[in-house]
Length: 234
Image (tube, rainbow, N blue to C red; front, side, top):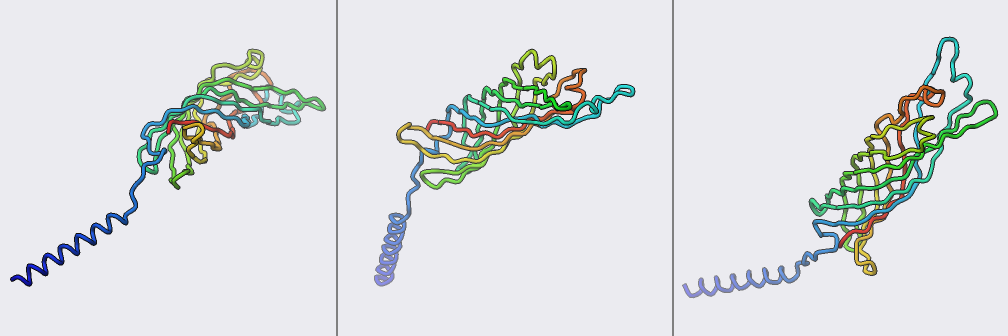
């Protein structure tokens, strides 16, 4: 009986020592600046935007106005955006990042007739509300991320003279995807998140107009690429 008791005590002590050693050797989970559940911040960005144009055949009687055009070419304009971002962490890997922005963007259409070229500048000012889904992987001091999701756009303004020539509809739905990296800045005491974003419109943005500029185009869709950087609480 005594031998069994001694054996039990020795075995119990050995088990305790092994468990204690395993606990001491186990790496502790250290919270990082990225673990904050709610992160509010600001975002700014810039890039290039344009309207993708699909041409139509406008004919009235025996007159086809496409015959007087050599080509309609698209070109980009500068895109500027700024606003607020609010990231909500769902897990270590997944987050949502609702973003509200004011956006200055648009595009140019060059109507070439003979040897002359007439440019219509479709610059607009809009408000956008985005709901990107974020996937990230934490490497300690930084974490790369991938985003994708929908964006709602409401155009607030277009130049009056251009609106009379080729109006742009106020509402649009866009799809956006992007990638970037989060890192914590000790100097700024916040999370800095640079990234690249691509956007494409799903709806036809061309308004109704009865002239050669509008009737020779069946649809206009937004397209842009921009570099953004946001600063969030860490």
